[in-house]
Length: 566
Image (cartoon, rainbow, N blue to C red; front, side, top):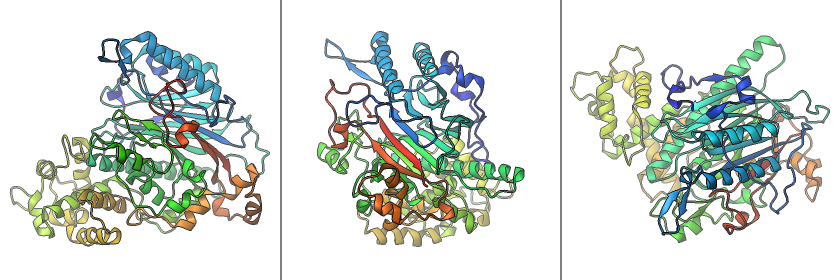
């Protein structure tokens, strides 16, 4: 199989931290061979009943996205007759049978786009099975292996009759969890119907699988992974718009972003709230009556760690839906389809605000850790890094200080050496191999951060502990559009969640309200509305299905139907 280490790191260079490997949709994507045929996991039905009807049509009027973590056989524990447990991968017949049934579901669902996590790309038989079945069903697909020689990865499949793949890129986080993301730039196929009053346009599709929340530090790691995705999306959009502007005099617009996968966090968790503050809307939450009214609820712990109780589990699922039965026996809603429309992306471009930055977020984390140690002045903070007191911080001294702040290693936020190197090079503005005091406070001004630290604690009446504040500081620093506390204007959320064009297309009781709001601004052109989003019916009630009802994975398939705003 393909060695994931051969993939070019996205964040290896300070001046282009997102230099991911570019991939056009080559013939090998359509006619994969061997392990490169790795096609990830199962997709599930989009209807809440037992119906197996197709959820999409190649007429260019809707985009149907299914996200599903299919639980790689190398991770699935199976109880043996003698009471012991073994990985399903050790029983090839059982493993292949489950994968076959997963593919039965995927092909029956027939979604426009299928985003799978934990695809077992390292197994040649599984890879060939997926390649054959998906190709036969009319899908083009791409596999992004996790780094660190992990046996699983992401599989992203797109129906040929609905979209052509303009470009595919692997986004490698190069972090302690070996996590990755896939970015696909999709364009409606020539055969798709463009006669609709609001035909689909280009879409950016992201598939990802964030770190499991093993402890409180994991939330910070997942926030960092989210920042990296947004920073890369911003760079890709700017590059694409720049190229288009050179070839046409027509005005260019940003593209809608559909980001889906296993986020390992609930809709009340820090990552979901951060994405909401950036303009993303959860398709499943948006499709639920009254969901917007709950957006002012406090951020909750992810409740997936080994110490979480069953009562905490019920609290985590109190939104009324679940999508995952984790290995602690807890049911949580962690699989999401998020939509970021062009109309919500314009603010930063209009006022020349800086783009999202994962580095800025990590600087905030370093500053917060220094404040926790009582290093409240810039001089004391600089001296902490300047080990030999020569008024210049070398890369080695920088690394030592970061380790002393407990930001790298087991049981920490998990910064890895490549990330620390990028941060150091970013601090060393003149590139002379020494960070002087002026360069240091340009990025790590703890005196300014202290006021923000106190403001966030006061604004949210935080009593839980410093990590909650650090998460807020990271997100606040990552992008100027983030509001302290991960809040977003409730009226704006409701407007996005219950979009008029979805009401019009679906009919029903809201059709009158839709017609009253039919006049759209030019900035909303290209936006997508959530027509529906579904999980297996028991999961929508917070109940994990019995094995005879659903045994394909420890995650449920989530399907969202998106339509263009008229």
